[in-house]
Length: 132
Image (cartoon, rainbow, N blue to C red; front, side):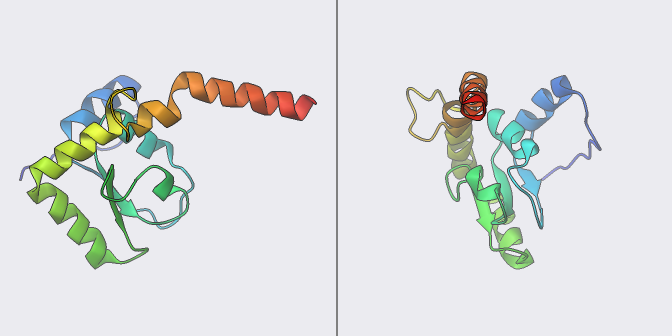
């Protein structure tokens, strides 16, 4: 397996090329609440491996969009990475679950739950509640 370190990428255009080119997105967080980088990975159809911490399980659906290791269990985390790197079919299915057209796929989480239109609607509803 070849690896390539890209360092920090700030350009959205470069991210949209880097995420789909990757086999996995590894996110070894110890504390996080709905990290944007996981939303970006999912929107690009890149399966994720992370810990079951904070808001991470809202995006990384265990065995659907990626692998969720038990908190701070490095052996479990490593097992998830190895499992997904060795099973191309499983990675492909998780990729489809991340990104597939929400009208055709039950688990099209990126499009179904985090589309720009839905997020705008949620903000408008929140503002209306605050103003009421």
